[in-house]
Amino acid sequence: MTEPIVPVEVLLVEDDPGDVLMTREAFEDHKLRNHLNVVSDGVEALAYLRGEGQYAGATRPDLILLDLNLPRRDGREVLREVKGDERLRRIPIVVLTTSEAEEDVLRSYDLHANAYITKPVDFERFVAVVRHIDEFFVTVARLPGQ
Image 1: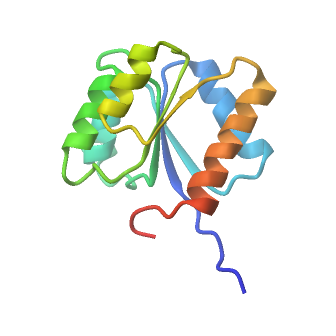
Image 2 (image 1 turned 90 degrees about the vertical axis):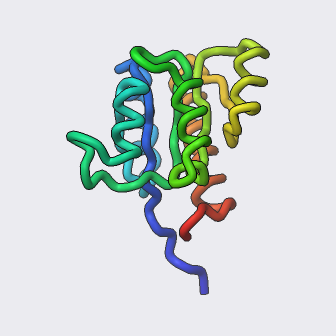
């Protein structure tokens, strides 16, 4: 007998409305059971994760999908702060960004990103990437607290 799959709380940190829409559609098109919460910049991401202001009582995410190029505080700063915070550091972070720069890849892993994925521009490939992330982190990997 297999255990039922428990929905995963995903925090998408993304400022591009088109990428947010594609991610939402990928979740809906493929009946992903995860709950997707979205914030549009690094300041909001940290407030959400710390349960501050309008995010008081927000559900702690099981997984973070993080763009690097964000307004106010960029993804590198968010990654550094989350992985430096004893209460948050165990949340897996997948950097999902348009940057293919080797410097960004190396820096993200130096800051303890759990994966680095360059966003495909094609919708079908983007959906496939989101599905693979879901399959790995929900079906294959064991997340903290599960």
